[in-house]
Image (cartoon, rainbow, N blue to C red; front, side, top):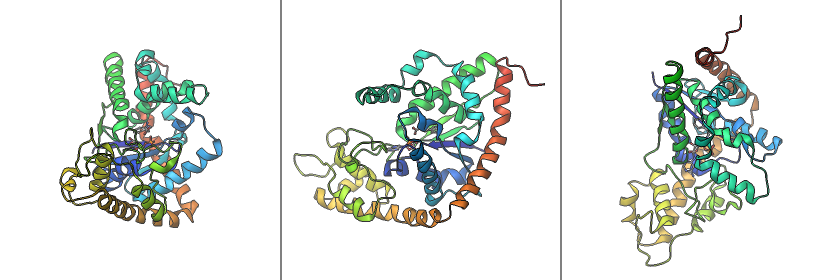
Length: 334
Ligand code: AMP
Ligand code: TRP
């Protein structure tokens, strides 16, 4: 059976980008298709300046939202990264497989380094080694598929390189995984800045729709989305009209009834397009928000799901990580 693994960081409130780019695929397709594991990757949230209480709060919120979005704990494994030691254990061994140069080439590392320096913050060493921990997340479970948004492609490529290199040097140990992406909305852009990805840590959140935003807030954000100057024809052109293209993709992803190209033809004005996008997004998020409110009222339920998830995950990861330790030359404990 196909093993599937993916993760989400508790660094901010879940966005429409997370939902359309990853989470919806997990709930609607992946959990039914194979043996799937979904992880709240809290160790990754410590790679940039963080507030401990907030990370803790957001870890619970992300876990609750994944259940609200439709992950079924009977059909998949939902757990928190720091509850399973194998991730950090394998990460060290993979650090001994990766090179300093390949880490420094990672786009996300370069971008976040610039951001940290601009904010006068130091760059944590863990930001550099972050992709290795992500590789450990995936390889520990022998996952062959990793459903992620566009921005994670490079990290999954690195994971493949490390798996192949390790296997060649030390013997067949890891499954070589591949990234899978949604057909539309693999990269939802910021509504105020269509050149940038909609991100949960963006400062000034007017262009970011959060899954838990109230309907009127969603509407306002969509209606104020930056479109493009020039003639008002609604066209799907990512290069020349990125704002409109983004709205068309969101509409297509939210059941607008066609591809972005097809939908473009059915609108005479940006205003009409925005109104339909707002309605479609509100309807897609409504059930998730409602279910989240119910689940949040019973925190014990989440705790139980995460406890069982961690136990299952540990049992799956342990043999592979032990095998990697033996293959690389570490002595088994007596
Ligand atoms: P993160 O918020 O970085 O932990 O991302 C969790 C998942 O959501 C990853 O698979 C990302 O690729 C995906 N994702 C994050 N932001 C977006 C976006 N703006 N558009 C599409 N997918 C996204
Ligand atoms: N790096 C991913 C992100 O920023 C999150 C992540 C961590 C992940 N470990 C993973 C995604 C393993 C897929 C598989 O979105």
